[in-house]
Length: 148
Image (cartoon, rainbow, N blue to C red; front, side, top):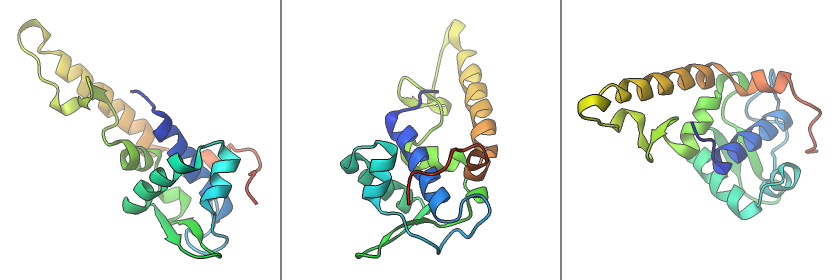
């Protein structure tokens, strides 16, 4: 598994939104909306790059956005219902790739035929970990939020 900057930034942004809008036990929507500029600054993410990530997260149904001076972002569901896997798939597609293709698309012949099974097992093991780890799980182990 390769964790791209895009995936890392997406997870950091989602955790920051979760911490600011209710966190591990609070409401998913409501409370304080988080502005993209505040997210970018607090997480050290270039704003132009972050805006594309936020769009992907919104299209995947993980974030709600509101326009205007009072606008910003909030989670669409409680942090305990959004897994790391949900976020990774929203911005990166497949969890494990082989030569840039999803592991399930890998094809081999002859002596290498068994490699596909290995890549599928790796993909499955990664999925188990990222799908059972929620944003709320990660927030329990966090330091105080820098967004206010």
